[in-house]
Structures are given as structure tokens and as C-alpha cells.
Image (tube, rainbow, N blue to C red; front, side, top):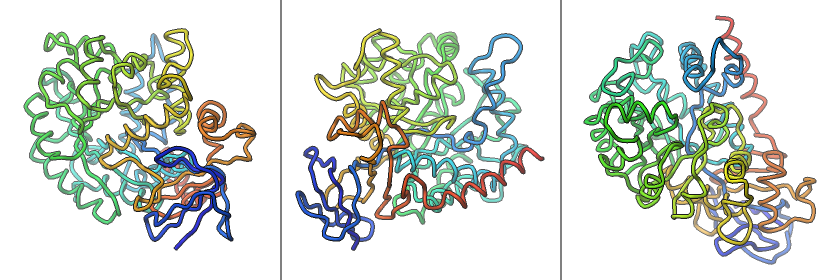
Length: 451
């Protein structure tokens, strides 16, 4: 048994003071309110962990490499060429080391689970590894050493563009036919079998990269698990989809696929009012990555309109150019302020914007990642985040105002400690394995660039 005492905690019924949490193994055994520490270690304010619903872990090592202007206009599409060149360099050892670094930073910022949208499957020449899910197994190893929860989303990538355009050289590490993809999904399930709560879903990459008949087969392979897809991230993608099918991407998907609560539509940046209403009504989650979407110049998701009609959303770190759960939430709200020239647009009625953002991200992220949302109550997994009440931005703050401080004024340096399934993985704001993981990361990245 482990006992932890918090000055306050966000429980299912709201905030409570002087809370003692007893952990038995991986789960919460008891929650006591209004009690003294009685020798238990003391912490600030406890909140449930958040889910990071969309990550490409290997891109952590290319953060900053796309910030050099080329000839003419730079865009998502020029950045993608930089990413393709970088992806050709990644071997299994580098994948594991880079993913571990990214996962450490996620945990330090308050994410306790990640959805890894994983498409870097094969060797640089496109030939499979001896173990088809070798790269997925390396992601599982990184999750194991860091302690983060993993929802592995092996990606189906078949073609280079709408209408069956052949994949290019930069995409050959991603490509599978349906038979090999089915085998990859099965091997991925075996690769994460040792993780205590590992989940495998399916991820048809996008409408431009997957043929319509294959989309249906990928959904079948996913069973009852999560289904993630990139959609309508860029205006050019919308234009190309219209030229190919006569329909916009989100509308085409809603018309031709059984989109429901299992689905996460990643980005969905460019939608009409009708698409926005239909996506909200489907019960699917919009996977929003505001920092990456700003970095890549994608555009602004219609979040205030979407939330107004009951839409569900979660957040992801995507390209991992900057890993910070609170900053993703702040960027989401700030994007709406810039667009509409008003404030507190994503608050659920009168009240705290920080609370609305964190609640929406926690519930939407959990749905998209295939598990129940985290709660601080008996019987639930002990996935806890402790916020530091000694931080300057937390002075005289409590309850929902503390969440406002975390999201808009404190961000990742307000996270003092994190527990994942009862195991303390962050102490004093640092992951317990940060030094070893950082050394391995530096060695791996320096080897890549020396080569």
C-alpha cells in the first residue's frame, strides 16, 4: 500500500480539500476527504492524467529542422519533404530512444497516455523488417521504460494521393497492402501484450493515402477498438478531394464510413458549418493538435462552433515540436480568440475556461484512446498528476482557478509529480529516468546526423 496526501484533489464530484489517496498496486484503493497527512507524503493539488491522442514520436528529433525558409513559399507540403528525408534516417534503435525522450516529456507535462499514430514501419528501402512490427515493438519498449500508457495505432498507407497515385520514394517505408497490414495489426497486438493496459487500434492514414475499399477493410480489422484518420488538415487536401470525388473530406468520410464513437478525426481543420454539425452528431472525437497546426500553418479548427453543437475533442502533440499538455489547451483557446476577437470561447457557459478545456480533453482523449477517462476514485487506475501550489502562478489559487493558472500561466513547470498505474514516474518536475533517457537520446540523434 502507498498513501499520498494532497492539499486538494479534483474528484468525480468536484474539488475536495485535504485528500488522502491509498494506492494498492496499480489502482486506487481508497480516497479519504478532510483528513490529516498522518505521515503520508504531502503534495499540492491532484488532477487525473490526460491523454495525448495524436503523436508521431520520431518527429521529436526533428523539432526545429523545418524552421529554415526555402526558395518561394514554405507550407505544410515543403515541411513534409523535410520530414520524409528525416524519416529515412530512423532505425529501430533510434526509434526507441527518440520515443522514450518524447514520452518522458509527455509525462512531465501531465499526459499519462499517448496515442501513437505509427506509420514508419519498414526499412529505408521499403522492405519489411524480419519482425513486421519491429518499429511498433520499439515504441512499446519506450512506453515500458518510461511508464506511459500506450495506444498503438498502426497506420495503413497505400498510395501517394487521391485516386490511386503511386507512393513516392519518401513514403515507401510507410506502405502496406491489405494482407500485410492485417498481419501488421496482429503483430502489433503481440508487441504490446506485456504492457499492463496497452491498446491497439487502426489508423487509415488519410483519404488521400487509402483507397475507399481498403478503408472499409481497415475498419473491419479494428473491431471495437479505436479508429483514427487524418482528415481535412490542409486546404489543398480539401481541393484535391473535391476534384477526386466531388465532396469535401469530412463530408465524404461521414457519407461513406461508419463514423461513430470509435473514431477520432485528426485535425478536421477545414469544415463547413454542415460538416461541423454532422461531425459533432456522429459522436466521434476531433483530434486537435493546436501547436502543430500553428507550426505547420494548417489553419484554425472551428472549435467554438463545434463545441456549441456538442462536439467532443481531445488534444495531441502530433509533430512533437513542443510537448506541453497545458500549452496545447491554451493554444486551442487562443486560436479561437484570434479568430473571433472575443475571450473565453471554449468555457462551458459561465465559469472556468481552464476547467472546461481540461475536462473536454480528458474525456475526449480517453474515448479516442480506447479506455475509460481517468478519475480519482476507488477502483480506478492510479494515474495522477500533482500540481505545485508553490509555483508563483499558483499563489492564492485553488479549485478551478488553479486549472486556469496551469493552462494559461504555469504550463508544464507547474507539474510537480505524476503517477502512472501507481508508479511514480515524475518527481520534482522531472521524470525519474530523464537522465538516462536523455543520454541515450543524444547518442542516437548524434549517430543519425553523423551518418
